[in-house]
Length: 154
Image (cartoon, rainbow, N blue to C red; front, side, top):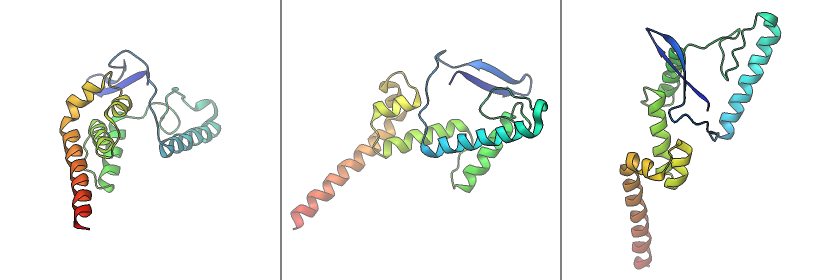
């Protein structure tokens, strides 16, 4: 990720540097890569149809015919998809927290989770998600307890 976009009523869409000023590679799932490839194909088809009228802004996602996609339109679309998926998320940032929680509860170690989130240290991730780690630890201890009880009962 090289840039960040934000939108306000006063200034519209503004391009900013990343929070840390560094560029980083974001790991993507096979499903995300397939969706990006489909988007690339859609844009190529639109370029062919529009010819010189296509306003290519060089971004991964572009409006129909090229140009910028309104950030609020993206947020509204995201909320619609989240509702259909049964998630009570209101922002992309909430999705980040959900992903972090799912990784930690799913057994992904704290360093890997920190790396995916772009945290400079695992301590940062632990500071934010300590409650999730404690919950995962309790589940792990409960799993050991169930195994020991089952072994004793035999």
